[in-house]
Length: 263
Length: 263
Image: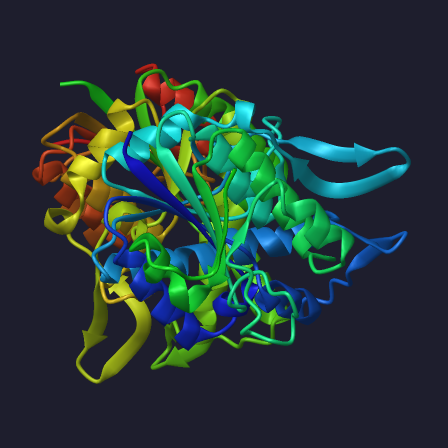
């Protein structure tokens, strides 16, 4: 099977024009099949504020109301997605910007948990992903650039976490490609001590993960990322990397960089 | 050759949620190959105002500065395009939202006329359109939904008139399909008297056009539309229709509606 790199890039890089440029330059140089999933960054928050849309919180959890959905649709699917596409095209990378609604790629279910209505938030599963559609785009030489929006097949867009989209697409495509999933962010990888970039944990497996979590080394926002990643491995994804955006090409060149997760 | 309907829908319908719903329902029922080009509408103006971006005019002409480009990228490629895609998907129409940057479909040149810098406005020509890319999407069963944005292949998005995109795509695809280009708007077609919906001119040809223009019956905004349309016919497009959005299916069912332009 051919190798497919699924790369997730987060807000920290997206918010910085120069960092984004450097990252896209590296991404465009990955040979073979690749797919980019991008997050949102601060731009959505800025646009919300400017439009006078206040974040809605229920029991401390953020709710995607109709106004917020409009903003993320504008910012994620419009501003960020199309600027990335235009920049990749300038780098001779044949980018195709997509949401989960386009080509019905990622149907989702509106989240409703007990008494809390999270608003327009979409929960997704790998079995529902239109893998043949993505395969078609990939095999025709396109590089899909996926914004973190899905749809309910009833005409509504939904907001879905970009990390979750990346791991779900990785699982959905694992029977068609040798998938390497790479989460790029602003740290060198998973760190023993989050203040010390030299304390990188080079390798995590299902055997070493429980201790790292019990000791609080993996905590907070990293927990869902890791849970998703380990699930992805169990469902056929070949490797998951968590690394600094600057180290993307080291990983695709199979040099040591970041944290690798494997079974 | 197979028939391809290229339909342009303007701001008047896009601005009205119910009108848009009815229109998309009709559009989804066109059998065979179809492609939708949408304009902008008032939403971009409203978002600009809310963000405090003032329209820039030079010699009475609107300039697309960096702030305006950000707004149209958000509104056209994000909000409008993806909501249309999600609604068409709910109608079992396999919509794929695109700008001219995606898959390098519509490369453009930044307009610069004499002393006036129009800002981020893109001029396009049929010969530069990536017709094989569009053909691939169409033949795979997708319905392209095209937002009025192009790119300069140097990483910049550009704003291009939606009418022009529709006619340029029609010409670019005329050697591959029997193209019918349908401009949908809020009037019954080209009218003898713009106040009287019953004064429809059912047919215009290159022979009858000069008189209509000389008599002022075709004036103002209709002139570039007509010039584009007649050029499209001369370059191989089979027919151009100018009609009310409500009459779309009458035209595709080859019943009499709107104004038809032919050679």
